[in-house]
Image (cartoon, rainbow, N blue to C red; front, side):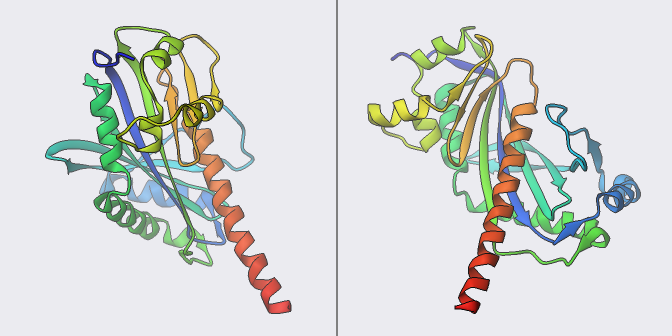
Length: 251
């Protein structure tokens, strides 16, 4: 398998942290607060995906970007947040990359996994968001439950190739399991069984705590859907905890 000549011409790594912060978030108040804070805090409203419909869609906004040193290299990181009406706030760190080898992309993903500085940054961004949204949070309480997810997003490679050709040349299992050594064929086959593709040049591979998205159009529909799924998972974990606690009390 020869992947030494594959370059990612355009892509990014998206780091997601989702927190349960309130019983409910009043999104109308969120929009009002964002209008008031926009100029002072450099906040910009972002449209949400049109891939699916919400009765009450989350409010998306961009915060001031940051610069981080990772393994001796400086990265300009875009920071986004979303507020869901069911009490969840999502922090997203977007790390754009361009003209890097697939091996360098893999190494960056490995360095970001479990990175304490990244975890600390997400908590700091959460504090900023909570302070902005304070008046819109009903029964504010940051629970001990959170969800983390990562998306490896590729818009284009060099040389140009179909998704099938890319998977033939590059073993994605190391990237998606954060491993430096080759994995066994059973693990690889199981991972590939969770893949989907519509056109010959796009594709998605799903893993428990991350996903690979190849999307030449730059559309964020798939990442938005995966984020929403994780927000729902977080809420299910929270209510499962509530049910367990009540059952312990009863019995």
